[in-house]
Length: 148
Image 1 (cartoon, rainbow, N blue to C red):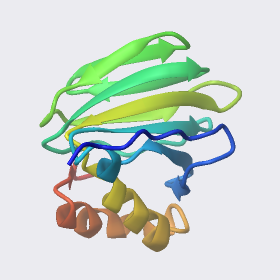
Image 2: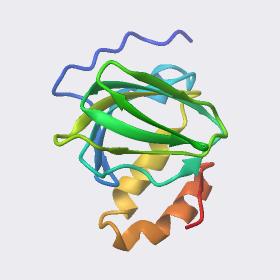
Image 3: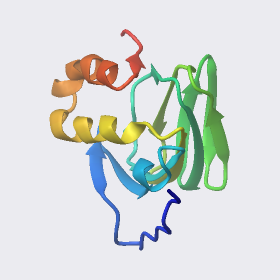
Image 4: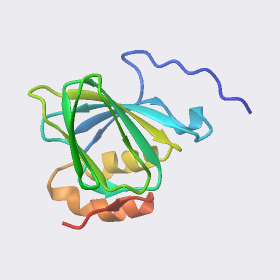
């Protein structure tokens, strides 16, 4: 079966609150037969996921603002127009460092993160209180969070 054409207008697309980051699905796994997915993230200052790893690759393109990444032992501050790639299996994290919220596209290959993000949106509603739920939720979706 051939995937159908998908158009997501500026005010459309499922948007979730994931650890304080607005995650909007632009191209979902079901649109690409799980080959890849694309999300837009709006990342407030200091918001972002703790260090974690998973088997799928992720690529990031910053549209606006600044985001600080840690991938393995490497730290990078990326700005609007910058691109960064995290291979599957790499421990990584990021957080917003701009005075205003950063905007970033995230490309997952193969598509995997949607169900995880939906569960986080439902179950982790108050940070930091609900952060203890992350390891179990992550394990259900193939993610491992670094121990603190």
